[in-house]
Length: 125
Image 1 (cartoon, rainbow, N blue to C red):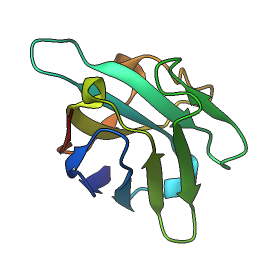
Image 2: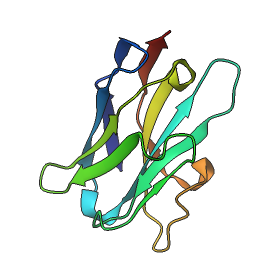
Image 3: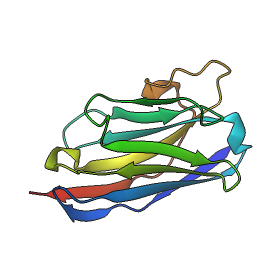
């Protein structure tokens, strides 16, 4: 089992920045590929970013590439999402997720085994 807890969401204006954190406990964090997903009202959950077990490889949705940065600190069992130049269309509940597959599929939500409860990000125009 892996328990995930997100934090860092909030209400900001367009152009501002936020940093989300995802604290993990339970199963060894370094065994898990990690990802961030988001879900806006009335929309399906969508991939935002993902990071490999070591942190050496990162993946982004085209909609956030060059604005968001995913990272992880395996010594602290924590993953981060630095979000810059936020736009109103980034408004959503953001979820962190963990995947234990030996060959992860980073982009598909249904491939992730564990999920956090989500944190709300609201960007006003």
